[in-house]
Image (cartoon, rainbow, N blue to C red; front, side, top):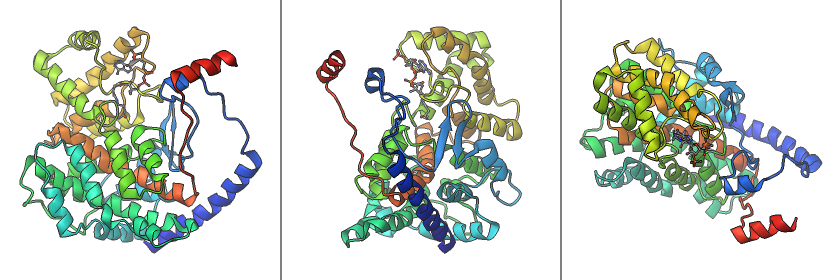
Length: 436
Ligand code: AMX
């Protein structure tokens, strides 16, 4: 959309002025001290990244351009007759700080639909991935298969001036967001169906509905869930593994396809995006063991046994959050609004929420005993019949594209340099601390 590109260009130019002035005036200001514990402990809470699209607060949760998820849900344009926010409106918000007008939105929806087309030979390549390959591996490879289409890589090769890097990054970022749902739909049918019979996308539908339709789901409430799901998983500031991996690889001027694929490899880890698959497995195992007549005491004991066997309780805890994840609350609210009170699995999610935090707290070591986004998403998807749970992280990946790709436009727009933090061997670290 010409309007969107103009808006992004204008706000990047304005922000660049602020950044340059700020860097000149305050480049040496201190943001805090780095402790040995942080160097050894995964850089937890260490300031180290400029990331424009979203900011996580340890109690309020994620804000997209200053708006928390409840505000996003309330203020976002919706599908006709719908109540959930639209992914393409969230993408516009992440890029510009504002929601699009109705006419801007319609034009943008058409544009994303057109950008989503994948050349036949690349579709054929993605369709040839083996059924048994994990869907996240297929997602990462599917994105890489589209990399030859990168406009940034071509522009860089043709010698583009560095002040213009943001422009082909913007083009690629929108293309990646538009294409990733098509790639994901192909993967779904590669793994669980017939990839010669993928339902066609409909230009009259919005992004979330079209994605759901291509997966083979025609229930309008599921379309609403998909819209909400994509919006709430899109961005979680810059330090989480998928955003940081995308940002890090992008800082080398690797194009958005290469960077996003790297981010997806990080999302595939069980402590990050794969946790939603693990979480559903945890709930189903619990149901398997206890039947559908479980009690809260049964859950308590099951969680204690899980901890005693040296495993984490998936869906609980967070590196930054210290309260129930608002994304989990959005899922619960959706369940309350749309899902009948006799869904045993959804009721189990709710019962776990009543029981698990106390058990985790009692260990005395878990920094955050509250549920994160993954504690609820699987049960909602199961309710609508999406029970291929090794696919769930792919849904997360489709959504995450919106945040990390919008952020990459801004990283190139602000001319952020290649990342290169300092590392130590343990011997160097010990020497340094003992000498100081
Ligand atoms: N179950 C059991 N133990 C847990 C736990 C949980 N849910 N959450 C944290 N702990 C343990 C840690 O393993 C660690 O134990 P250790 O000292 O023996 O190694 C200790 O508590 C302290 O960890 P922490 O400071 O609370 O957490 P962290 O910042 O190191 O890790 C996270 C955060 C999310 C990886 C961790 O809470 C976890 O493993 N949770 C379960 C997996 C999960 O739900 N991941 C999804 C996160 C959201 C996402 O990215 N999708």
